[in-house]
Every structure is written in structure tokens, then in C-alpha cells.
Image (cartoon, rainbow, N blue to C red; front, side):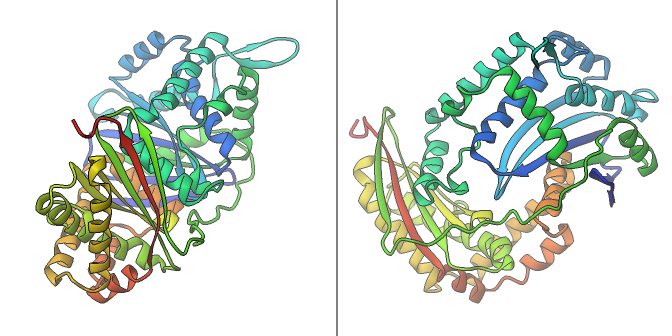
Length: 426
């Protein structure tokens, strides 16, 4: 596998040449500083652009076009990455070797139709997205936002960060907000789209068995973006530590099961601690059936249906989630706090550390087996200055018991949140 980053005036082109796949994957990422109102705009925009374009005016026409391109698949995502909002458009299609000459360029043309030739309507006063297309995309996003509460695990984590760091970028919901959606019109969204093309930081990733000169020419011919590329800043944003004692919040929900979430903040940490030590700590604490929380809270005491811990390195935080019965709330919290404290006191073995490292190393090695996982790795290298596969394996192997204990000593419980179901006694 060979990687090369090609810098141009308007964007960075990342070419990852590998013979592991019969497909080629192209990802175009637009990145901007995180703004609460714009999250909703960007989610609505990916829906609108992927619903139809000027050349393919209906979803049916787009489906026919993908069939003609040997079942090309496309998708778009919008997500929060620390201090930034990243909007990505992906296409995956068969290499020319298995189809016909020029399929690479034809597939790129399809992507560019979506990105640069949207379905719009013009009048004397303004240009806007097509009314029917906009309304369909609007309803889809509205439904997605309203459905968030139907996923207790996701909703509890959102509420946890809103309580941990209110009115900050840490509290922003990646799905967007109904109150912001109500203010969006087809004209406003189109104007935002034009602004995005002019001001966003743009990165293009191409993965597959294809020559760099061909990729470079095909991209240069089609991406006629001429704006000056802005300098990217760090995505890492730590939450401020403000509470001497954790805040407890209980909210009711019309579901059988309750969802418990504990949010921990760290004191100042190094990048090595955030990227590697945190993975080991989180795995030992609640990363699987061998973890402390699983064995003690779930198996030994039968206090939860599920339990896990997850490090959030971009926010310098750790989240513990558990599905419980409301009547077991206090006991579950007590046991979770006890197990976190035991990490700080060094009550774990070298074998625990080794299991965590092996699990991490295996997951890293598996990145090479899937183009989407590879894309995630290379976007991490670009946006977060992450290490490559060899670098990650080398650094995770250096994590010691002393490192884990030291990081655990920096943990401070900030919020205890319970999404309380109303039929727990049943």
C-alpha cells in the first residue's frame, strides 16, 4: 500500500494505492469550524444534494445511473469532529479492470453532478433548491431529529454532554435541531451551499488499484474549486472542569428500560494518553466481557442489561453507559464508581493490559481489510494527526500499567445522568 498527499491551492488530494480491493472508493470531505446553527444546514444539505441533481432529477433516475455504472454506491454523512463539522460524500465502484475503460472517470462524473450541479429553481429574485426536493429532504431530517429520543443509548449520551458542558461545542447534537430547521428555506440553504463551496476546507481521498497520475488528472479536470485553502486548526477541545461534586440529573422516558450514563472529565492529558492510554484504560474498565464493569456490575450483581465505557479523546472525556432498572440506580452508580477507583489504585493485572493491547492491535490491522475503515484511518491522519498502522501498533505496545494508573488519577466524575423508564418494576 502506497500513500501520497498532493497539495493544491484549493484542496488536498490523498491517493492510497492498494491492490487489496476490486473497488475504488472516493471520498470528498468539506470541513468547517463547528457552528451550532450550521449543523442543521449541513445535515439538510447532504439530504438535498443526494436526493436529486440537475442531470438526474429524481431518485429513480439516480438509481438507473448507478446501475449503468455497475452498481456504484454513494452516501453522504455529516459528523462532528471536536472543533469541526465534517461533511463527506462517498462513492464506491468497480475498478476498470472488472468493468470497462473509463469507468473511473464516469463514476467521478456522477459524484460531481451531485456536488456541483444540484437541482435548483431560479426566479428574478433568487436561486433556490427545487421545492419538491427540498421539502422531501426537510421532512426526512425533521423525522430523524425527532426520532433521536427513541434511541435511549444515543439520547442519554447527547443529554450527558449537554449537562457536562452546557452551551459549548461539546453539547452540540450532530443530528441538528428542530428550532434551527424551521428557519431554513430553499433559498437560504442554496446560499449556504454556495458559501460552503467557497469557504470550507476540502480534502479528497481516493483508495484503490489505480495510478496516481490518472487520479490527479481526473480530479483536477473535475474539481474546479479556486478558493484559497485555509489553514486547519486542532480538532481537540478539552472540556473545562468546573464541578467539585458530580451533578445528578434524572429525566423520565416512556420506555421499559432505564439508561444510565456517567460522564468523566480528565485533567490535562498528553496526546499519547488521549490516543493510546485511554484505549487501554477504557477496555479494562468496560470494553468487553472480561472488563471490570461487565464482571462486577452485570455478572456478579445482575444490575444491568448492558454496560460499557468509551473514551472520547477529542473532548478529553470518558463515558460509562448502562441499561438498568431504575430501582437499581444507586447501587449501580456505587459499583461503577468503585470499579473506576480500583483502576486508579492499580487493581488490575499485566494480563488485563495485554488483552487490551491485543484487541486494539487486531482492530487496527483489520483496517486494511475494508476501504471505508481505511478512509477513516487516513482522515484521522489528516485531521487529527494520528499515526499510521505501524505507528499505532508501536505506540500502543508502549502503554504500561503505570501509564494507566496515572491517567485514571486524572479522572473526575462530572455528571450522573439517568433516563428513567416508567415501567421498571414490571
